[in-house]
Image (cartoon, rainbow, N blue to C red; front, side, top):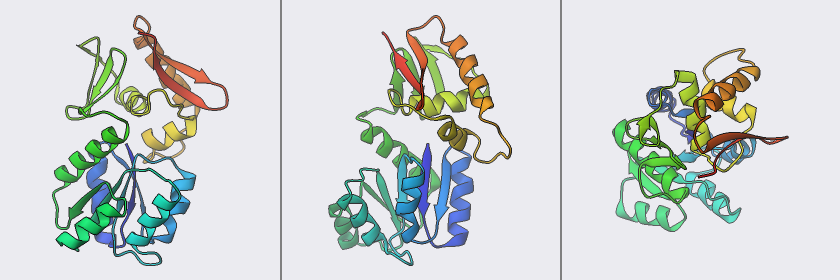
Length: 222
């Protein structure tokens, strides 16, 4: 999943980016509320972690700005302001969840997964496309209830596609999600990985279709 983190505490943000990366989250960080809208225009994110005490444009104003623009990105408020009034007001303003500092990373990860799957209309911790399923808890793929053996890079590409099944992802979006911490990775790498994944899915109803000018989309005919 690709997450935007809006947090002005550098030490906390640096730690969070590293901690979430260990659980396969791709995290981009901004430390000013005015950067949120710009980042959302440049990149498609699965969720926003939003601190209320941001410089430039406060978290409440950022949230109001997003909802007024009908931006339905899941938003998790992360703040030291742990009061009932603060929680209630944030939820009324359009936040999807609220987590007070200090917190455990495991809880933050679980809340992010829950937000994303609810946003996609799923109430269980699995992403699915026909007989292909990805369990966000175990981080395992199954195809027709059998474990699917994949290399780490194949796994990462297929995870990005299944999290957006039915929606196209461009090569650049896949590169950003899979290789964000690697330098000089060429778009051709995505083509190679998609080719390998197509072979692994060959005898199933699940396929990766190329949409000219848009990218790749994971679909199922069954």
